[in-house]
Length: 314
Ligand code: UDP
Ligand code: MG
Image (cartoon, helix red, strand yellow):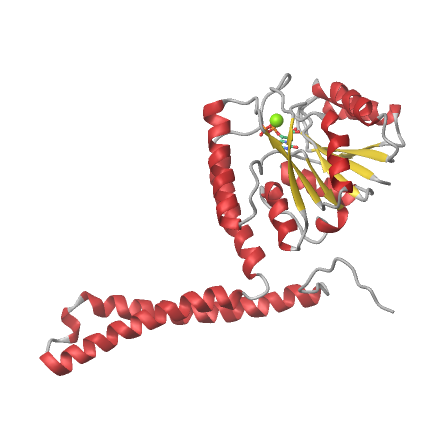
């Protein structure tokens, strides 16, 4: 199988027939073999019936994965990856906001030697104030913090070579950070503008509360990609800094006492310095525990601490 298209579906009954027709039209001219994996994320409308109808019409190409309840878009994406058989995995929204007609262009770009081709909704058809503005800020922040510069992390339409997305698990709302993980394992990435349409049917499943989750996920992703192999550099680094500051404070108080006889306990510096030293010490210990956990993580799963592109021998 060349291409798997993975689509999370939550209450999108009206869109589905149009979506599938658009995919068929878009991919009709391709010489590649392809399949569509629809993951029904516990929809409460008639999405499942619609999906089963599509599967009955084209059993060779349509796979429907039905969740028992709503687990969220990230989990749906993860299940889609687990069921995909293609060498290339393309993600798409079910609501017709992404345009399947962009897929052939994206596949061509992958053929040029990229591991990830990321869609960018250059002319985005969503509410400017509640959607586009927070999204702009989030993209700026994620790019700044991770060093992976993309204009549009939130755009679902992205294509990946299988090898760069099967090595890790997705939790929380993490699907938008897949490019960061892919970059961390050394994937070659390209960003291309794609079409975007206003929602025709149903309504968006998200509101502003998503912004908070994105910020928290960003912290987690940054920690995992930077320090998951060496957590003590983070905990220990902070710990040593705090310990040193505390020590310096106490030293200052002791010297002052010796030279100008000011009582140590008269100054708030005392309690601050003691706290800093204690917290620094704790943080170093926490780093050591994290080191143990990392070893359990890598060794119990026989996970190497590196990722390979290829090995040539003989
Ligand atoms: N979705 C999902 N589970 C959820 C919420 C959303 O599978 O809990 C799907 C939804 O059906 C759509 C995609 O994720 O295919 C993106 O959702 P939506 O269009 O609501 O997000 P927006 O485009 O407004 O950011
Ligand atoms: Mg949408």
